[in-house]
Image (cartoon, rainbow, N blue to C red; front, side):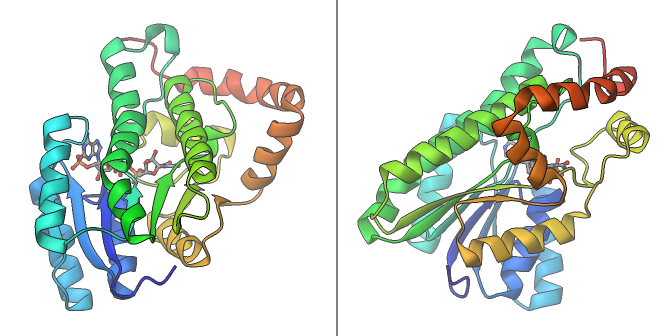
Length: 268
Ligand SMILES: NC(=O)c1ccc[n+]([C@@H]2O[C@H](COP(=O)([O-])OP(=O)(O)OC[C@H]3O[C@@H](n4cnc5c(N)ncnc54)[C@H](OP(=O)(O)O)[C@@H]3O)[C@@H](O)[C@H]2O)c1
C-alpha cells in the first residue's frame, strides 16, 4: 500500500511502538490522526512530528474500551479527514501475572483493549472502506498470539483471538479492495513491560527490540502488504514450529517457564 497522503488512524500512538509508528508514517507523508487516552503524551508526539517532519498530525484523546468514545472518534475522523484509508489497531495492554492470581478487572481490561476495541473500531470503519473499495486494516498482534506463553495467559489469548479475527475477516472481504494484515512483533522495549518482564527477559535471554526498529518494520510490512508478518528471528521460526508440533514447544518451554515463574506477579 502507498503511505503518501494515506488517511491513517493509529491507536495507542501516545507512547511505545505507536508513537514511533506515527513518526515513521509521518516521514512517508501519511495524513495522521493519533489516538490514546493521555492528551499530554499525544501532544508530545505531535510536537516531535511537527519538529522533525514539519507536519502537524491530528490528535484525539479517547478511551477505546468505551463505546461512546469510539463513536465520537469515528465522527471526528469523518469530520476532520473525511474517512480513512488505513486503520492501525495498535493500542494494547500487557500483564505478566500468574493467571490464577490475576485481578479479574485486569483480565477484562486486556480483552476489552486488545480485542473488543480493535474489533469494534474495525466494525465501525470498515463499511466506509468497503464503499470506497480500498483501504487497509492492520492489527498489531504479538508472537505471543501464536505461541501460548505462560504467565501471559490472558494477553496471549487476546492476541490469538485478534489473529483469528484478522484471518477470518481477510477471507470474508477478499476481492473487496480492502486488505487485512496481522503484524506480530516480538518483545519490544516499551513501557508496556514491567520491571519484572525486563528482569525475566534478562534471565531467560529473551531478545527485546527497540520500538523505533519495530515501527520501521511495521511500516515496511504495510507497504509490502503481506497478510501475516512475524517480526524477529528465531521467533518467526518458533511460530511455525508451534503451529505444526506444539508438544515439541511444550517441552522446549518447560525449563524457561520455571525461570519465568520466579518473576511473574503472584498477587491480585
Ligand atoms: N512491548 C512489547 O513487548 C510488545 C511485543 C509484541 C506486541 N506488542 C503490541 O504492540 C502494541 C503496542 O504496545 P507498546 O509496547 O507500544 O505498549 P505501550 O508503550 O504501553 O503503549 C500502549 C499504547 O496503547 C494505548 N492504550 C492503552 N489502553 C488504551 C485505551 N483503553 N484506549 C486508548 N489507548 C489505549 C496507550 O495510550 P494511553 O496510555 O495514552 O491510553 C499507549 O499509547 C500492543 O498491541 C502490544 O500488545 C508489544
